[in-house]
Image 1 (spheres, rainbow over the protein chains, first blue to last red):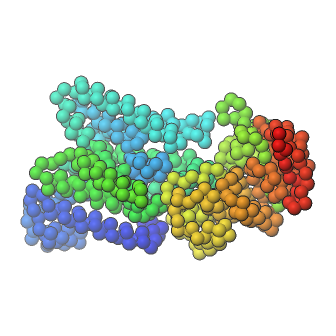
Image 2: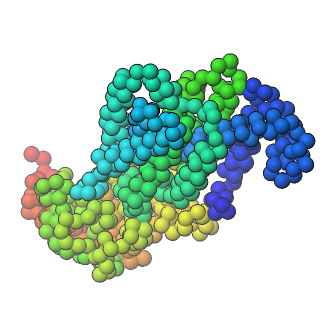
Image 3: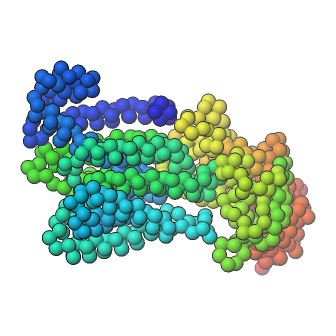
Length: 348
Length: 258
């Protein structure tokens, strides 16, 4: 971890501290809000008691509060934050590799693949086993990724394969086929169609600690790999030839980072359904603050992504009278915000 | 340092872009590659820099095949100023020049004092120091080319490849950069191979010329010997007059009006 801290210098360190504070604050606020309001002081003392192992504090607090915090809210809140973080890192990686500030974690059709897998699981009624929907979604996402990479790779002409245009085109083609497949599955699904639609729109309702730790492991590994190759990713933006002449093994770095970014997106989609806009908006906006250097962009995006998605989820869970699917909320609110940022900065 | 090309063939698809190239380049010399559009000049540089793999033959740098080296090892020996100097994200000029130090900076660490010093000095030499905090995509073509030039020089390699590196520079900066390169060839005993379109600049600055046509070497040798009316007619299909010019201290080419 010290090596990770070491590469952040000056202003970036302050930004990391600042965004971490925002995130912690947001987690505390979110914990207190909901059907049962829990006072902030109780939350802090309960968390302190749990972390320090001081059982005396825990015994004196309301039993309901403990259940609500540790079994209901905290898993959901932390899963939401970690998914936001992973989507933002994944988006940053894709924008870097595809040399396109408008790429997002789903550009290569990972979401369509996951959705297709999930639809099959739901349709075959495997959802009784519950684990199988995320598992099918994850398998679908991985299969799609390798299909897209296979389409855009040529061993005969290595300098042209895996180029950003090839990847984006293959991604669009595969995603188009899969969405037609999804439509077909919906068409033959009859009464299960509503389950499919709800899954596709994404939700953090009834997420467990298992979900959180699954994404956490992926994010830790993914972040380490991304930071390991962050400088190479900077060089890739100089163009293939210049990057190669500066010592970047383009094919190796591209494949490793594509797999990393897609795995992050795949685990997120499997856990929470398709949540758009976070992976596009967060890295794009953070770039205005940190500049294009991926060593700063990726860690700050991670924190900002966690904050933003948790903010959105808290609104749909605790503020709105009815819970709106999170994927819909992020697109409905994130879209206009993005329009504003885009217009304001693009023509500065 | 010596670069040897043995029986090099290369094809993207079916037609050979580069055919049967055998030649060697020695350090302490400035070489220019000349030839009409599509004659394989850039491809030849890409093969030398290890960006493309030859379909046949091998390129050795001091007896070691280039392809047996890792990309990082190559980048400490060969630097390249390529034509794709468009940069997709708004990096600042000093960050772009610092990228030239990439092969020397270990992972997870910041550039050390000497790296920063070298980058500052190179930006001053290339006349872009006043632009160091500007974003690269806001600069003009010529300014951007000088940034890429500075970046390649920061790479500190014994071999420097220039692919029409002066195409967007004004004459003042072109001469300045050529002087810089020429000095490093003579003082630091480096090896420069440059693709040119301007025959006169090539003739007055380089030690040897290589004429390329349809992927084959048409002439290779001392500038004075290679540059003749006959070779120019043969390679470029252009009528010309070639004379020794005292001011340039080299042969110069004139094109008579028709």
